[in-house]
Image (tube, rainbow, N blue to C red; front, top):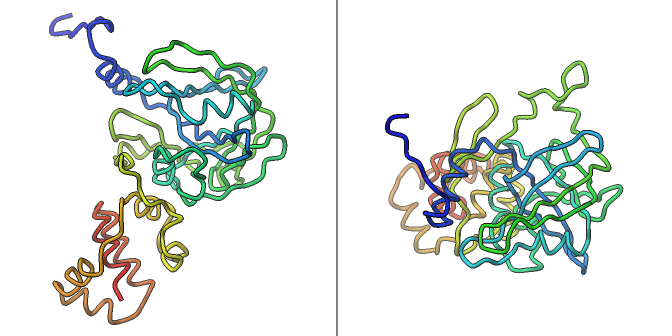
Length: 293
């Protein structure tokens, strides 16, 4: 075929190969995997090397790959090697920002449920917790772990047999089947891109390499807002630090409309205005408005 670029995987770097694979093979469903370590500490992390491979028995497989940059492995893999159980939670659009925030590489033992502002629900048959906000949750036992290599970028197939399924009835149609529109799934593409069922492509900036503050560090008045959504909170939690008082005052005093808005002391109106900044991906400006007194 004319103008085709042909590549031997051995002739390019692993990061380049990784980029081609992720850019070409998609949209990929996301396994939002909840595990626990030997001390019973929760861990929550998303993986887009994932799918369903059997109905009898019901088997889901996801793959935490070895990190390309330094060939280290993830907490999820260590956890399922010790406690052979996992809950795989389906990701829909309502929690996509929180899911992305949970992929931050927090230190061992940090609870990503708290960092992402998601609710832990006790499972019925396994020890890891379920994500309450997820529309479908699969309690699974891990039946096999299959390493695919020992170098950076190598996958580790985690065979997960479904023991119990939890479904939010709000996503069902009149026949009791899962409605593809109501479930509003998202899937992973290359780079920062995601696909939303029936809605097309959208971007979610990757979590900060410097580590975001997390939803648990957001002041309660903001975290319990009647206006801000889980996705809004996920974006607010993905900042390295909050603005200083001087930065906040300079921002508010530079605009008469903002000074008037703050002076009204209407929390919901203030949060709606901050939400507009968030929707434009101007999260740091949203923080300045939210913290104005």
